[in-house]
Length: 295
Image (cartoon, one colour):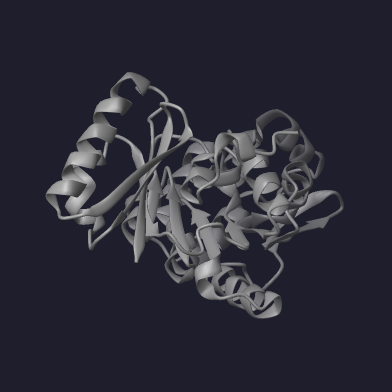
């Protein structure tokens, strides 16, 4: 069976990448890998090292940790189903924290968010408590927050448009709010989105969200449902996220990827993106830069 090690450079330290690639080749040979073949996905930036033999990530980690990397079977690399978290993954911020900033309670809300992301708090309880803290915030603030605070993560649209051009189905599944996921879904080009709905009364937040809360189990259910509906094997799916709420879908996907993640999420992932943007996930799937859809 052919295995592929994909290495992607830390964009802040491109000068070190060639030495990392050379060290990876040497380490693979030391571990008994055979039929080693190199393919550049982007010159001096991303490379596939295909080989025969049994090698684990633990065998390689110390050698290649200064780069983003993924070790996987050469089969079914280009996934046909992608599920992505939104906050701090497809976008650069946590929307609930940004809303809290307009109510002058950002520090208090952000602390709860951070602990929930680390898996230190029950997600549903943490979610309800933060939403309650936003009670009375005017509805027009959400539009201001979206226009002024929400920024797409680098490579987000390229990632989604490229894999859709290859026939993949894409889903944005978030423990955040539909007000934001619906807009991000349109901007990036996801096929579907699902999140929590904030409740309003007289143009202001009530401090409540519609039940049931979209949590980690709901994300997992979306993954399983879409696999069945699309007639896909689990190995044909990829899930990406950054927090504890993403762990079940990361663990269950054919390729589970953490993105600039909290330790709990990173520990469960098959591969972690620590340095680069979302185009790294395209390289992990074997796409060359000339295959990227960038319109």
